[in-house]
Length: 280
Image (cartoon, rainbow, N blue to C red; front, side, top):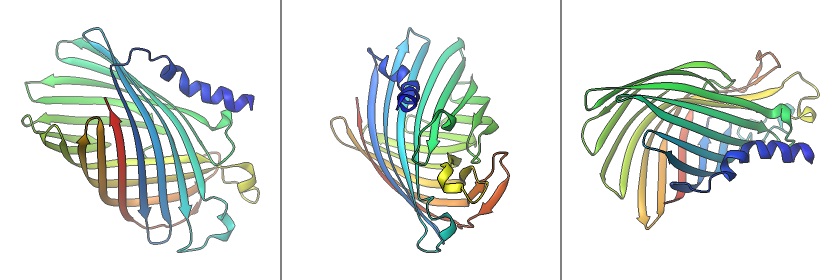
């Protein structure tokens, strides 16, 4: 019980310290990702705040809990049947500031606990990244950086590069890695976007789930292309709909040195997600 309390405190420190937040939102999402052999469904809740520190700096913080359920009915895996529920508690803290008139930098620190049912300090991993943004002209920005991310499943250092182009007041483009995005908004109530992203996650396995094997983590990764629509339905409330497809989807078990020991061969599949947000 003491360990569980201390781990949770690690994620709540920055969140509880926000007495003068400037922007605040709470989001609840439900997502389903059926594949040829396995169905994945995720439910999540996130709390976000943002605060300016003077004229040139700001901090943001997002505390999120998500639950992943894996349904093996289409292709039964009796040997790994107990690996059907995974949990994640993640806190993303970001600090950004201007270095010069057209140059900004942003630092992200992301402690994350990914586990099956037993939360322990050994489940905590620290991710994060550092980015530099340079404004070129009035419409184009170039972003470069690097970070320790889980976009390929297991945590590893990856580059970050992007070109942001503001075509007009309604349309924005981002072309880069790991994320690309085109967004359009004709007024304050509607926003339409098309995104393509490399993304993934990992979960530490309970000792009881791998007693007959040396598997230590369940690892997922994919390239996701989705069309997203967000609608302000009144006041501070927003509805969000996402639909698309997962390419190159992988679901593997790995050992303590990140060697693959089992491949579920899930195949690709579509993505459907709905969310509701309260934002002020």
